[in-house]
Length: 261
Image (cartoon, rainbow, N blue to C red):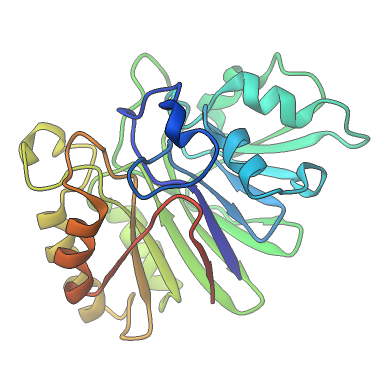
């Protein structure tokens, strides 16, 4: 399985990137979080997704499916989704919580599949299990989602946005243990840790969480634990995060990073 991080930032990344960062990836800027699994499954599609795919010279026609974590503007840009869907012979497939369906219902040439947390679906050769995330979309009925993806015997957890793990999601993670790769929300650094406690992780929270996942067998010594969704205004530099968190068992993602496992 392969995951490519198209963006590793949070909602505080400006929609229009500074000129020096528009034409190449850099650890000095973090685009809004989204990822490409294999070459055909997109997780979220925010304002920077198409630009990142262009930098990677990705074949957009190969991207057939979109899994939606939630519809906050840094994760989903309907105009970008519409561009991906346009001109295809087969409709572009969108997988999302039922409460998020209205966001996509007016986009032409899409096939929307409502998901229910805990119920597995088959997307091409990939088994996908949506999990309830501890996050909130204001004035909406949608339940934000994390994802388990299983492909050719390899298993991945993707968890951006959301704080800690909900009890129901934790039980499902136990059923599918162990994981080869786990991607964690790391929105908050060391400053102002309490301001987003209910909906995002801080570095201190993750330092507690990972050893507990090891104790439960969800993660093992072979599991690659990856940090993403890092707010640029709530963290120090990329190099500082690496220096602090890699000795504690974490890989710090950056825009354009590709991990095969």
